[in-house]
Image (cartoon, rainbow, N blue to C red):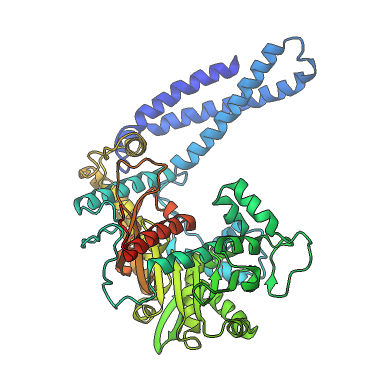
Length: 585
């Protein structure tokens, strides 16, 4: 009965808090000044309720042996206590996401030592001493990016993302490129047709058929978890079991760090169609700057293929995050590249050359060409590995799928267009994700919040409602909030962010995806059921179209390797039909 009374009192106070919280806008809090009194009242109720819940929990435990006399009352009390603890957990989550406990004017400087402790806590399973230089590098980067604690709480950021998404969506509609996520106006190509490259002539090997073929090797390098997870689990498991090394014999010397059943190697063969005899080298040694890779012979295309695995471990995540610029010189051109991926590329290069892996492969496949491929992190490492090996193998080519946006500097791009083809799908966030792009998105969020005349609950509520239940857009979000002048602290905060952005631009040279970029896009069809594969088309573009993060519910799904493979296979089939004279729908 005590808990029931506390629940009723909580409901009354919470209703008053909600009523007051709905006043004003996100940054104009003057109509919500009385909220502090209500919050203190709610805190008193919270503490009393917590004490009563602890008392109820203790009573239940003490009366457990004699609960047979009144079982219904006992179980009702259990349900009430459990409900009370559940409410506490939910309230804790809401408090953390909704309130800034320091106050909006009390910014705290975070030291490099504090950042280093945070990174060590996140990656506590890794050896701290061996990777101290990596944690130090990441801490220095965070000191540059986040000099002060964020003024915004989680719900503020969510509201800002919804506002920026709406603005981008309206812009795309105005440019009549809803089915193509580039904001720059240009002539759209017809579905399943390839537009002319805007810069250098397209190389003869840069075809949809070739891209779809080598994407299988990039996907296969992820091993058995992806093979089973991205296919029907039952059928995939039945296909994989006969290929496993059930004898548990020590694998041959060219297969290292795979499990005893050689499940990753077996999954690679099933995905790509190659045999064990075609495997030249398999390395699943995985540390920071050490990425697993496959080397095999593809008799169909007469190629020696090096497939580099993408992000699949904590070590790979740290390699992604080391975004310092490493000075390089390729083809007589000086530039900068992503340090983490460059160190990984040098690791694979040393293995291929020092251990004689490529020499052995070309003795078995004399006259074949060298093809390097990978997806995501593997694509970035593959592209830099191609730059490293170009002088030794001038005829090599590289297919990089969903290449990270932070890879090579501007002056190296023309050189990479001769032998690297980057393939990106739709709204994929990874080719667009970089230091400058992330900072620009953060400033866009701040400006959107400043000029929004709606309360936060309306922004979030309308954003969720319009996404899942109606096609209508948020209304009135483009209106100017005339009350934002009252929040001078927010204007000062935006100015600080802009100053920090300029400082980071001076310190970190912008990096871009390399090579000629083939952009695969979904054909817009509002009548298409959600469970039907969309139609795709493709066009050649350049890195300028990937200098802005495009917010979309598909921005993560478009990065999945199986989605990209499906799109390329569909386009390759249309391309084959057009060359053979068959009629396509």
